[in-house]
Amino acid sequence: MIQPELLDVVELLVDLPDVQLQAGDQGTIVEEYEDRAYEVEFSNSHGETLALLVLKPEQFVVVWQNTTKTWVPLTDRITAVLQKLPEDRQQQVLNFARSLHKTPA
Image (tube, rainbow, N blue to C red; front, side, top):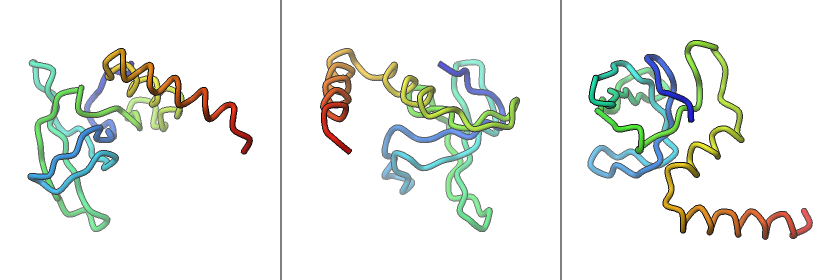
């Protein structure tokens, strides 16, 4: 799993209805705290801040790394999401992936 760092772009794994954010929304880490918490800024296409929240790593995955200036490969993102799921849910995802593999495109 990729360790989140300052200025990385992250993608929510959970809905946050209190601030009108949904899983899949992306924000930027603007502060790191000692207790494995990260302040993440979510903004609109005009650069206006929509929300500034303190999140735990279980709530997001890194999708762009500031240190390398590159997007995280999709397979690495999928792996990061799977690692955060309980084992029974991981098994469901594996079964679903197998069914996709069997189905002709």
